[in-house]
Length: 313
Ligand SMILES: Cc1cc2nc3c(=O)[nH]c(=O)nc-3n(C[C@H](O)[C@H](O)[C@H](O)COP(=O)(O)OP(=O)(O)OC[C@H]3O[C@@H](n4cnc5c(N)ncnc54)[C@H](O)[C@@H]3O)c2cc1C
Ligand SMILES: *[C@@H]1O[C@H](CO)[C@@H](O)[C@H](O)[C@H]1NC(C)=O
Ligand SMILES: *[C@@H]1O[C@H](CO)[C@@H](O)[C@H](O)[C@H]1NC(C)=O
Ligand SMILES: *[C@@H]1O[C@H](CO)[C@@H](O)[C@H](O)[C@H]1NC(C)=O
Ligand SMILES: *[C@@H]1O[C@H](CO)[C@@H](O)[C@H](O)[C@H]1NC(C)=O
Ligand SMILES: CC(=O)N[C@H]1CO[C@H](CO)[C@@H](O)[C@@H]1O
Image 1 (cartoon, rainbow, N blue to C red):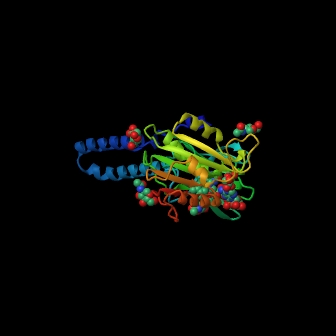
Image 2 (image 1 turned 30 degrees about the vertical axis):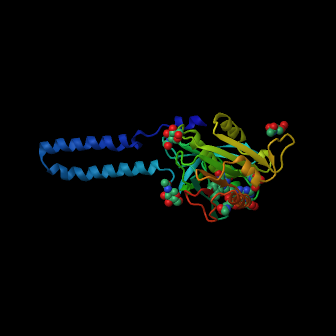
């Protein structure tokens, strides 16, 4: 999978240096010399050609380079899908050039539009590939038996096109802006959290501590458990605690739903240096918000704004 992007050679003329700046300089130098030799008349003939050329190259490079925009839909090609649990897969899409990165800020997501029954449906998905990934991005989607869009994704074949817009969302994150992040995630709500984890772990000067409670129904529903455990092992500032509603016999972590005691025990306190991030199904985020209020977090009761101490995705 990794090699695909490398095999595809970018068109060297798509890069501004080769496609615009160098030809422009050569062209201008040519004009200067001929003008010097044969008078101003040449300029009148040459300049329109020059501007048409530069304009065309700039427009073509711009069109190719920005694969995903927030103001218009782009159709991008599915490269492959990797099954990660009974009903969840990671879908990889090609960007339009192999040297482009998606480069969303942590906590921003993609808007997806798919055709359903002669109309269309719009949903949101968080990219989970690292920001430095060139030429592609990954999204992880859990299929629900009755889920219109997630079922559509499960039926896609490599080579098919899907419409994307982005980035959307307003969560603000900057290096060291909090001492500790308290995070509560449920089910596929882990995806925006993965982006933030990736950002912090790949930024060596970021010393933010992260404590994550991740709730699910069964062990099989815990998405990317191995990756999370590995990150927790490698990165001393990151801890993860799992909660299962229906655990297996050998389960030694918490059982049931998320409780206020659990939050108090595993998450940093509600001081001004810390933030609480919540991302899960409706039932989960409303009970977690109520506990958070009791624990002293600044719960606004409205849609979250970028810098709120308590942010609900
Ligand atoms: C900011 C944001 C980021 C998101 N990122 C991701 C992501 O990275 N990966 C991902 O898989 N999803 C993500 N989601 C959820 C996603 O947008 C869809 O809601 C989800 O894929 C279900 O859509 P659907 O059309 O398949 O189901 P619908 O047709 O909308 O729903 C059909 C049935 O599925 C059930 N259902 C739907 N969603 C859930 C759920 N989360 N938990 C339990 N039951 C559910 C409903 O109760 C309903 O019965 C994100 C949502 C938001 C708002
Ligand atoms: C973050 O904090 C660490 C430790 O205090 C410091 O070394 C680093 O320079 C800080 N980085 C930024 C971008 O503030
Ligand atoms: C419990 O047992 C199952 C099956 O034997 C195994 O896959 C799983 O990793 C175990 N879980 C824990 C928490 O030890
Ligand atoms: C809780 O999560 C759901 C589903 O992800 C979302 O639609 C809802 O807006 C969230 N609740 C709050 C209070 O933000
Ligand atoms: C943070 O978010 C708010 C509200 O979404 C926005 O107005 C503000 O400009 C953002 N700040 C930064 C530094 O990005
Ligand atoms: C996808 C999934 O299994 N979601 C569940 C994970 O656990 C939370 C909390 O128990 C449930 O609310 C979700 O429905």
